[in-house]
Amino acid sequence: MVQRSRLSLLLAALVFVAGLTAAAPAGAAIAPPSQDPFYAVPSDVGSYAPGAVIRSRQIAPQTAIGQLPAVRAWQVLYRTNDGEDAATATVATVLVPAAPWTGAGTRPLLSYQSAEDSVGIDCAPSYAWRNGIFAGLGEPLADPLAVGPALALGWAVVVPDYEGPQGMFGVGRMAGHGVLDGIRAALNFSTAGLDPRTKVATFGYSGGGLATGWAGELQGTYAPELNYVGTAGGGTPAKLLDVVKWLTGPGKAAAGLAAGGIIGILKQYPQLRKFLNDKGRTLYQRYENACAAQLVAELPFRDINAYTTSPDLFVEPEIVAVTTRQSMGSQAPKAPVFNSHGQLDEIVPFAQNKRNVKEWCAGGATVDADWTLLAEHGLGVAPWYATGYPYLKARFAGLPAVNDCWWIRNS
Image 1 (cartoon, rainbow, N blue to C red):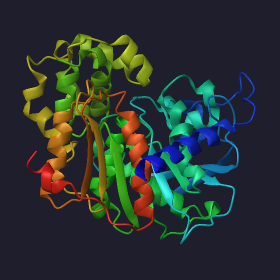
Image 2: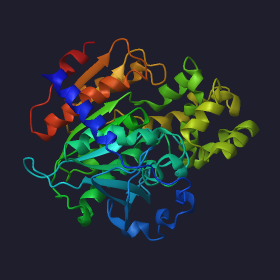
Image 3: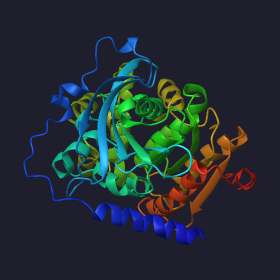
Image 4: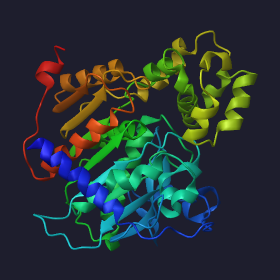
């Protein structure tokens, strides 16, 4: 039954995306976020409540090969908080199927977190949703396939630019706030026609898994009013320092992601730039607005310590304190969690994710663990996607969640 459910959801996604209209005209003049006034954070942003909609616009959502059909879409600029609770604003893309909801209760809302993995606002998922292929090759171009099953099932979808206007990649609390306030914004945006008490859930892999996991962890205290029913994360970088150390050691082929994470942290904590040496300052200035593809392509096999004044950056007390604060595990998610991870993951090590899940279980969380024995990071996408959707479908249906914590504690 589960296998048939997974297959039907995958087919629904493919059929939905196959229904794309003709491609957008080449050279479509869509200003990038850095040049688009819509993204500007107002000077009085602190006067808005978290999740309040500051401005909105209707869009024609684009994919890599054309416009997404049968979907109404808008973008909203909304108030949120950064990783140290300072007021800021970011953008979310809200997608609602044109067909009326015919299921039980109200139309559910899925928050999908793209694996942005970038440190520049022009890499934001919202730009790809407006500009399709012309936004440049990157993770957000896969988003229509990722949310295809949700839209085919009649769910509404919100895709937040959870890294905020500065591209704070790796700042987990910023990401969690951005996701939860994006959900609030979608529910507050009356034009979308969503019920404020509708059931909501989150879904994301890799960098998107980071934001998804943080949303699940923070929801009970940061956004307790939400009717939040589940979290489905995969390939999750839960422990920031562990992941960065791995990416400058055994996982050095993807060292660019570690560089991006450090740049994101330095944006949140500029006082830590004192640890950069001349090479480090040059690297920061060159890549402070880079997208994931550039980081990965141009910065493989780098040792982060070569760019610092410290012989071992990873033991500096200030670095340890900050990375601990921006790592999951300090509180258990209130809603059930689906946690998917490949045990051979070469980019986001399995051990740090397992340790985080054990911490959640110790705090009383309900966790359904799908730890795939022979999957690395790329192959880990399939079990997360194929199993995560049935998991969230069951949460929206009000079914009880599996709890694997009894064996996780002893594994």
